[in-house]
Amino acid sequence: MKMKALSKNTRSNLITYGMVVTAYVVMEILLKAGMVSSLLRGLLVPLCMYVILAVSLNLVVGISGELSLGHAGFMCVGAFSSALFSLCMKEAVPAGALRFFLAILIGAAAGALFGFLIGVPVLRLRGDYLAIVTLAFGEIIKNVVNIIFLGRDVNGFHISIEDAFSLNMEPGGEVLINGPQGITGTPQDSSFFIGIVLILITLFVVINMVNSRTGRAIMAIRDNRIAAESVGINVTKYKLLAFTVSASLAGVAGVLYAHNLSTLAAQPKNFGYNMSIMILVFVVLGGIGNIRGSIIAAVVLTLLPEMLRSLNDYRMLMYAVVLIATMIFTSSPGGQAFRERYSLKALIGRKNQEKEA
Amino acid sequence: MALLEVKELGISFGGLRAVDDFHLTIEEGQLYGLIGPNGAGKTTVFNLLTGVYKPTDGYILLDGENITGKKTIEINQHGIARTFQNIRLFGDLTVRDNVKAGLHNHYKYSALTGILRLPKYYKVEKEMDERAMELLKVFDLDKEADYKASNLPYGKQRKLEIARALATDPKLLLLDEPAAGMNPNETQELMNTIRFVRDEFHMTILLIEHDMKLVSGICEQLTVLNFGQILTEGETSVVLNDPKVITAYLGE
Ligand SMILES: Nc1ncnc2c1ncn2[C@@H]1O[C@H](COP(=O)(O)OP(=O)(O)OP(=O)(O)O)[C@@H](O)[C@H]1O
Ligand SMILES: [Mg+2]
Image 1: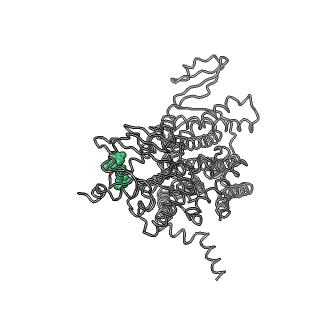
Image 2 (image 1 turned 180 degrees about the vertical axis):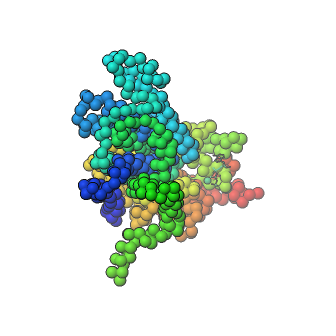
Image 3 (image 1 turned 135 degrees about the vertical axis):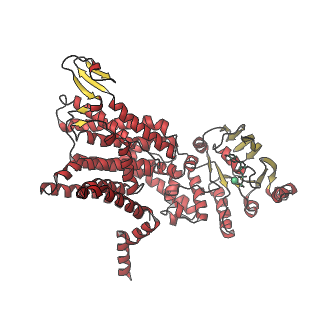
């Protein structure tokens, strides 16, 4: 009985890992065979990034049960801190792999730090209030990044919040962060392969955390806060832990993003609330708390608008139709009954029954 | 020394004095009943004992230690566990995981150990599984271990709540209307289980109940609350035959 439960869980997780690896292998073969359009090739790294964002946000929204709308802010922090690091270390650490590895650690640490600092005051709030405040914090991060000017010359670092001239640098000084223009010249260390590795690491962290004492505590708090307290579970600690880990992983997604572009600037498009909401849409459509669903939703919803490009103006219309259809399919009682009846598992089960009969 | 000693306990909600000058002494191993008409303040007493509400007056000693005003999780760690009048399970977790959540503070490993799946993770999880199944067996829930808790029938949900509370290894167990919504057969079975828990786990139990058959069947001592104040207290048979108690229940 116990073995069965364990293996059922493990099997489901293995399917998730397997799905990612298979997708990677298939994609690599297609790439080698030259069957991938340049458009799709350019989407590979962003796809990995979206998957990491969706899975990590699911940790807060699905597992911890808190509505957070500031995920893009943590991604922003990870992107800028790591891009700055890579830019500064371009000469000091010429080995791309090592430098990128360190950049990822820095992005993760920066995300975690901001997640923790913002989580402490914000997690006292619940539901809609939490959503609004996290949304605000996400916007604040993006806007603050936009007014930072940072330069480096022989005397060291200079910082200003006005413009590049007020940095007062010696001749030959270099502007690292140029306010709204952001960071230019980040080494392009991201690749599809690294993106996949980071997805697998994200999955490893999230899945193992959920299926442990920690995850149990987090979900217990989600299901019934008062009861969780009554059995001695520290509510603040575990909520904060989930929030911090999630922010840290969003930071990693930011690293991937920053090192995929030569210019990194904080815009509403990439680090604004539209992005946070889009990630939330992935999570909701994939099924709240469903890790594999988050992956599929992130991939499908990123590819869909591109695939429908030929439809021009009808593109967003189709997108909306797919959104609504998925929502009905995954959330309405009718859709759920349909899924149960025609799911792979049910079909196989029925066949076995027929065999036995 | 008594296991639980409560003196002059009181709380007001705005102008309402929900509990006033409440006292209670429970010896180790006792099965104690707290009864009274609807709205008398019984659940409020539980909430005061477990730190859900902070008392405005009085003090609470558990095993000689002052736990007045402490937080719920601290009080649980000191040794008070409870169930709730309106069942509060971890609905989306399995029956087994509900109990394992109760074991949280007794079987530990760090978050990192869990993520990295170090050997300690497997060892402790195995011990937790064994302990959880042991507890579930007591309540005849072992066959439902993999069910989602919210899918259990009502009577079994109540039992699971008791199992989860016991998992925290308390000195004192508080049961808030454990028989509510149960049919006579289930109630009879529950009475046996409560007795079993007291005898086998050497547990001290304080319970709130409206079912007089259960109360007279298993409680040794009673305190009767009415409008937030103690109406009377003492041995069960004496208290239940007290005309004051009968009028309080039937109304004047
Ligand atoms: N948080 C609160 N705020 C305001 N009033 C409260 C609060 N909690 C309880 N009360 C009031 O205190 C009184 C006692 O309530 P309590 O729930 O303790 O009654 P009870 O004896 O458990 O009744 P029942 O048998 O119906 O469960 C009631 O009048 C209730 O409305
Ligand atoms: Mg009550």
